[in-house]
Image (cartoon, rainbow, N blue to C red):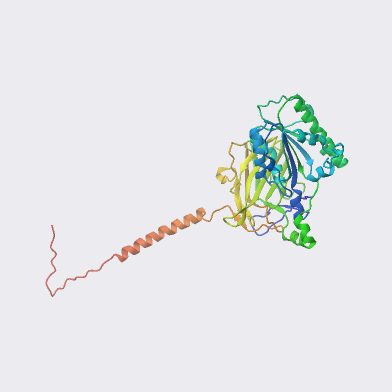
Length: 450
């Protein structure tokens, strides 16, 4: 499982004292972390031909966020405008094998309503392993594609809603039995959730409302073993865990945010705090997300999500990371900032004097629509990949090589060089007289030419 610790350090002899550090460290081994970050996703719809049969993934394939969008886009563009998202707390593909009717024992299945819905649905798709990053952004993705904010509903609320086939609606249904799953057997938990799914579907079918439904979970219920680690043996496993410790290193001298032009300094609430809420933070070899939650902040619960990705580029023959975006979640709304300028080789960290949405401080945080939120990070540094120990790697700085000071120096040097060259040219152009007046000889006469 994941554990988070906050480490505060003091660096003496510099103008950064005290230096503020935030270290997210993982207790489990690296291979187990990668395996934990996969959850199943089950899709079905009342419309036909939304997913081709060849779209089913093979065993061992992990669906990324980009691949998931290729599956969802046709359903959202061509299918029903009413989308149901059933979100459990924990679920793994092994749960369907252990508690489902896969061997013909339908009466013993904990997913009888789900299995019946898949059998009757004109279109369905099962993705056994979806990357946790893709699932964590699923609600936001659906909201953007549908143009409708997610509506948290239960059975009572659903019966009062009047859904329209032509108007988009995103209904988020948190299955109620997950909160107390620690006091119940897994089969009872899954059976209770399945009954809720059946009741919701029955309500929609009774009103003859077309829909597309998805079932997934916040995190897996089981930890799968990594095949490569098992094949390599225990010695290989110990060696790999010593190579790198999966972590996110984050540092800033000042961390300030503003909502409706009211500024708050979050520095003391973020660094050196033992009970900082890091729920939702995760990382693997390809994706990482640092999630910081503050409550209360501006009278609400606010979550800041720094989302990073690492990809291989054949042109440079190396991996590069990019902070794809910054999300600010508050009161059911999400503010998006493009931070694509925060980039560098994956083996490096990234440093910048200012990462801010303010134009006078560089505007590295860019939003496509006007936002009520503003943010400024002073002396910002982050590293989410290839972290070893508690020290940043070499920093890729946002400041270009030709800074204003360097440009001024170059221009001054070129100007002085031009003056020197011009003076030297003038000196070399001087010519001495080749004839002189001799008092013993005839007088030199210069004839005026008219």
